[in-house]
Image 1 (cartoon, one colour):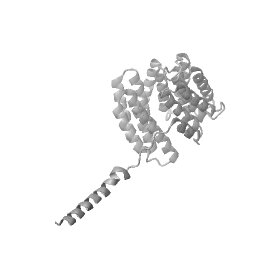
Image 2 (cartoon, rainbow, N blue to C red; image 1 turned 45 degrees about the vertical axis):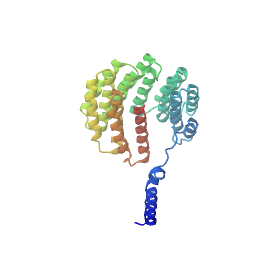
Image 3 (cartoon, one colour; image 1 turned 60 degrees about the vertical axis):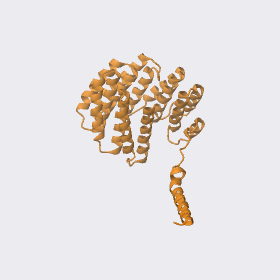
Image 4 (spheres, one colour; image 1 turned 135 degrees about the vertical axis):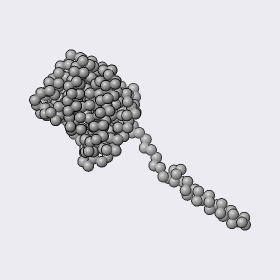
Length: 315
């Protein structure tokens, strides 16, 4: 081949190579966005439009501040979050937000502020007309009263609130359809409040009830809660068996929303039991399932829960 022709061919090959390689080197992949700064996160939280949204998001920012060692910043952010909630606000929406704020205050050793927030949540709980919702809120309140790291270490107050929740969960105001959900909340409340004996007693009722359930979501959630409590009490083998049954039930659910939330319940229980690989796999399956949910608000809620579980698994 004459030299000019060879040179032209070489240049053409080089240009083709550049055309092919350039997208791979820098044109195809978008640059990763930098993480939001705390100031940007606070601004975004303030702009949250949903009821209770600013309080929820500000509490998340405060936890990040506390984790990074900025205790003063966390306290300021929590004070702002608390200021968004009136004492006479809708209990169904705002009592859970107050519980989040109280737990976050407790993690930075602001016990007085934590107690004020959780006492207000307890007062709000009395206004809840839905007995299942009330059980769930009371159980979470009991956790904060009795918890050590993210609580007030007040066993007496925790026992009193959780006993009220347990009575309500076992009473006639709650139908058999929702009783497993209520008992699961109480069992976990006792466990997280470091009241192991009470937790095991409720868990025995929960396991017995779960055995007879045909509805797969409450069955999966009940078994997951029972496994969580068993793992905390040291009954690892029993917890493993319950988790396998819970995962099987969750994966067999047809509806995307119910399946996603059930998978997340089991994933949380697996994490608590130390099965990080199993929890990660179920969280990934829950994410795929949540993406199929037709209702936009329900999908958003499910995906938020997925992100929370995945973040907890990472660290």
